[in-house]
Image 1 (cartoon, rainbow, N blue to C red):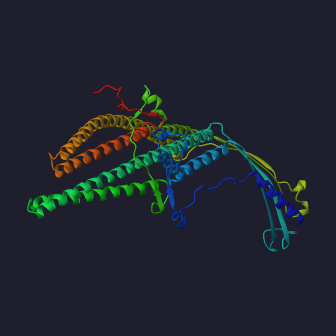
Image 2: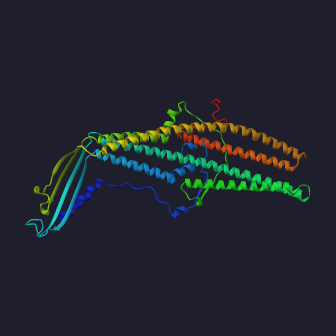
Image 3: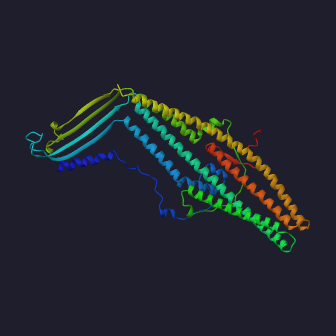
Length: 480
């Protein structure tokens, strides 16, 4: 029995050479307790990191994006896929190296007296022991295993690019939602001001109608305008709440227990600096294009691996072991059970299995090429569309700024005329509503411009610098 314990000790000692230590999952499911934790995000004292979104110089935006990148379930899923690809690549290295295994077993068995076991062993109880070391090596003469390794490494690089793409998508979505939230807050303030003007107008026409100066028609018209203004306030409040909820979910938090404090929208005009060679220098670094390129290379290596399957396969196997029914003679020379085997696998007839597999790999390669080409064309279209939208919004902002300035100047004149008794309060209130309408349009255009800047950066892969410039966007580009 002491020798049995010795074998077990040797067995468990050798297993420390092959261990799963350090391999574990990093994600945890959401629970009721984690969802009920209150979160309150305020503007931090300083920015956390230097990334593309820091160009907006908005600490709250930077913090929300960093939280989303840390806690978003989509980011956790992308990171898990990267780890999966890394381990698959590690596993593809194993066939290139020899394998060595230790095996042992102990068995207590009584042989039947009238069975196949001959005397003097029949009818007796024996302790059967077996201890051995197995060696195996596959000669990768045609490079099949090396091609499989190269394919998995390229797939790993593609998943890492997918992670960068997920990071870019989440960060730009947070930025666009954040700017939409700021716009909704500003629109609520403008809509409330407009509601106050409508209530004053309704009050004035109602008093005139009560005194017989006005008919009921202006009263009903003012009532409809007041109700419409009130509905507008509620609509923008709803949009504000929805934007807050979306930001909370993007950050991986429960929107019912998350509060996001914001500051007033401070609009700045931004200009994107584009290199002369847009396709070569910028689009090649887009994460989705990078991922598609790596998958094309992985598919090419898979073709080579499938071709290697048409050639003979050579394998070397060796066993060094001791086997005995008598424990005290287990490690004697007479108990050795050793062999060395050189094997060859020569494909002769497989009913077209290898040809079909190669055809599948070529089809997968063609699919990867098609997806890669389409990704490049889509990227070019996205960049062209965003540049066109930026140029158009720039012109619209210039025109709306002129309209708003003229409206503000006219309102000041209306104020002077009102104070001098030239016009009545109704005309002043109605013109104030016109001014509020122009302000709302201007805020919408500013928000669209900021969101278009973000979407343009996304189309360019987040690799392009941008800066604040008081002048118009892309003013150096010739007009068509």
